[in-house]
Length: 184
Image (tube, rainbow, N blue to C red; front, top):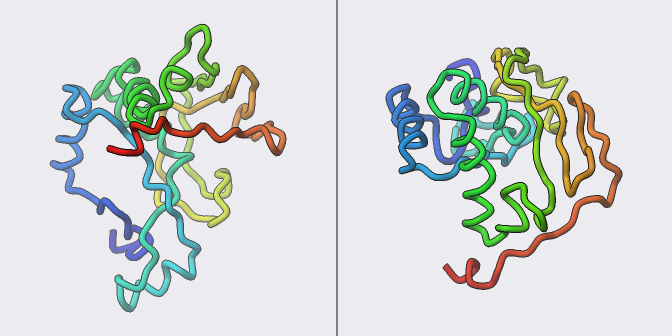
């Protein structure tokens, strides 16, 4: 924490080790039903100002690309949650919560066919230079994670493989939430 200082300013804030273990238990039991990233990265200059006054630093970290490997490494591979639970809290439950299910969030006839292939044995050190963030830094620099995606498929098309983005510009589609979800 002292080394990264304002680079770790985020919401929700960092938790104690006991809090983190309680969150894993909550995921396993189902009292925590969703995982999302805190992906709201700030450029280095937006973080550096926080060394003088933390309130001046941008609040957010780059995390979307490391979220799945962290869940696989720290959750699934350490037997804190099952792979089935990881799928549920990363995909199915968010799709249901935001009114995107059954088009998103599962694999079935009529669904979009979005999924990730992972290698639970692949071990890699996190390096900012290997990630696709425009901010050029990661709070997870140097972490060794076991469990990485090897391919990402969107609507049945391979869009990323072995860390390389293959998707052509314009592939993404806006999927609106259902009106009743917006009114909650």
